[in-house]
Image (cartoon, rainbow, N blue to C red; front, side, top):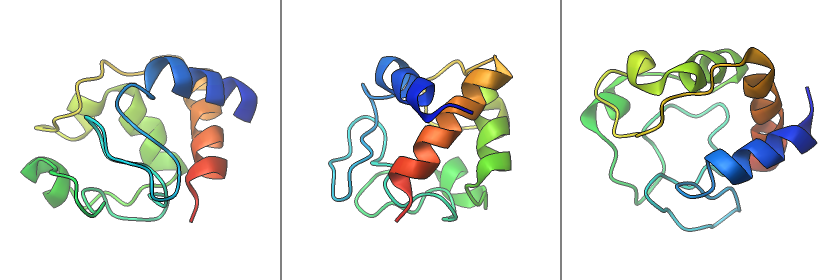
Length: 104
């Protein structure tokens, strides 16, 4: 897993909707700082879909690996408009970046 490659993936595919800095703003999607180990739909001040809030998903490497492949299939009814990251290596790289950057 490469955090450096994950950072590049985040910049090109995620940063238009998400921020990762502590105290960073929400965009179309929530700020992701501190989401590792947290239940989905919990970032204060962000308007989540009821599907996301009710999913009960706890974000970790395994759940993110599945979610990032096809978000709309993993949480039916999510507002996240992202087709998914199909290549397993890219998902692992992105998760390595998110884990290092977004852990509270």
